[in-house]
Amino acid sequence: MSQQDQGSPTPTQETKTDQGVAMQDIRSSKNLAAFTEVVESRRSVRRFTDTPIPDEVLQDCLRLAMLAPNSSNLQPWDFYVIETPDKRSKASKICMNQNAARTANKLIAVVARTDTWRDHAKQNIRDFPDGKAPKKVRDYYEKIVPMDFLRGPAGMFSAVKWGMAKAVRQFKGPIKTPCYTYGDIKNWAMYNTALAAENLILALRAHGFDSCAMGGFDEPALKKLLNLSDHHHVVMMIAAGERAERGIYHSQFRFDYDKFVKRV
Image (cartoon, rainbow, N blue to C red; front, side, top):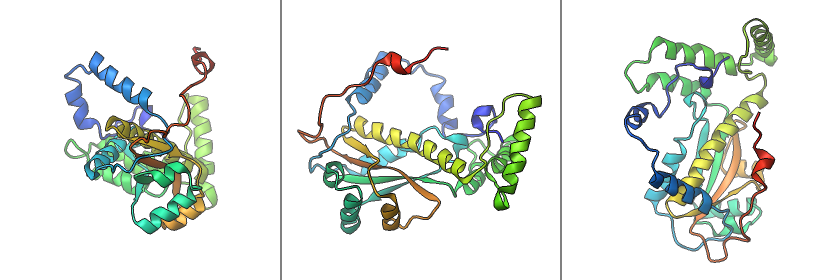
């Protein structure tokens, strides 16, 4: 019932690059200035120009999106780039005909998956980047991960997990709360996928393009359009393109820093 942040030796996509990065100091004023510019210049753009996003740029942005941190490297996401004219027209209407959806050069559905964790657990073993996966890694993906997600017929296994978690907390100490219901698995998939969506948004800005993350859409209609199953959940729609002259509706502002930051 543990996960990667509980100290398990699970692999991540960063395994190979971490060793290289560790030998250099990325803490430079140049890197910080570039990152700050990307974050501070990112806006929710509502109108875009006709300038296309090159295919290679979009591909790189999606690649960077999938480097997002995610639980146990299970990567529970799909990205649907809606390109065919008929689907694009219908998708814009499903997004309530928002200006961002209508004028975007690219319209992307960011989708969380609740049905891929088992196959992806096996793939983490099969594709382990540093030779044959060690026993600890295999045990994690073959035993711990299924224990976290499986619920059993009528949720019977969930009751067992609840009792086990309660006992561990009482006699050993803190333990990650496992997935007791399908809703727990859905929430897990959605917050992991949202991390990838943020990477995509920032990558687009770093390439000189803009985006608008949209929650205003008819999900059942969109799932029907994209032929998605009950195990697919649309986290957000992302409209992307080049910022138009009046693409931003008003100046950016946020509430006071101290309203949200609590030091305990």
